Length: 452
Image (cartoon, rainbow, N blue to C red; front, side):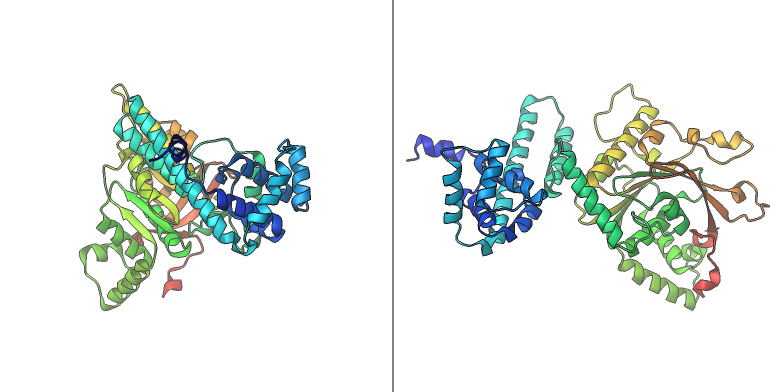
């Protein structure tokens, strides 16, 4: 028959007193363990307050490169206000006495991490139950909240909360060291277009990149070029959400770009023996790439987010295109016009880029305003239906081809990629070569004979 005390203890969240004490004891017995523990555990992974205070003291001492042993830890606990005259010294001795060996610290860490994970799942379940009982949210809202919180736990970070600047600085230093050690010319993923990479520093995590143009300028082609290059070379998975074209059409376009066989030949199937060899080689190359395609034409931002959360090692999300999306996936208000809906979608896309911590490349249609101007190059004011798109995007790229409006232009296949907004650097213009038969954009120095 369980006693009242037993019932009270059962209501506690999952934790292991022994594992917490063994981790701290290992750090005190053998200071060589400290860096391994600090690399894998956070302060709130400890459930017992006293253990949390000791770990926080050791963590701070490690950051200041101080000597860590039982005497110095006790002294620093006094300075931090964590010292108890009657208990602290005896508890430190107890930690060292009850720890079997510091050699098993890795196993103690794993037990601790598992208990901390169970606590976070339990806390999330409690929050969701509270939301349901309040009755203010719809089932869709609660599902979105559940996915967001579980994804945050899976990524090893809190869904919400203030972060000390010192933690952020450590992350920034790690990132700078990683960039300094690598031989990459740019910090972000490559677009496959060197001049564009140099201008925008590549595609960087948590950025919303908007690629906008009038119909027929090659928006989808450029997006597929970037997708193809990233999917083959980055080592990460890349996801393409097409609201306009079917999976089969997209695959044909990718094969055409990869093997340099005229797109018209692929559509009609009139291929020579050499063409078939090229197509087979391209198909084999694409099979080995990490490209994922979704052609659901009624997809919302919430749907995209839910699908992307399940993709491990995601590197890039591409959406074609913004104005075809239904809504941001939340509650729709009867009085909303299309401008408000597009504004909600663009905001949700930026939030998604931050949450997934990957670059999101979204295509956008331009209004006809440029058609009536003498100079038909697009401007930020041409973005259709919402100025909010301009505000939310970190980078805005416009595609423009003089040959589209004037077939007698000196170089009808010269394309301009206009960088109209760039949070990472300067605005400007990059010249590209458009090859219509392969629906491909390349750097200006590209020559067909390079590919035989």
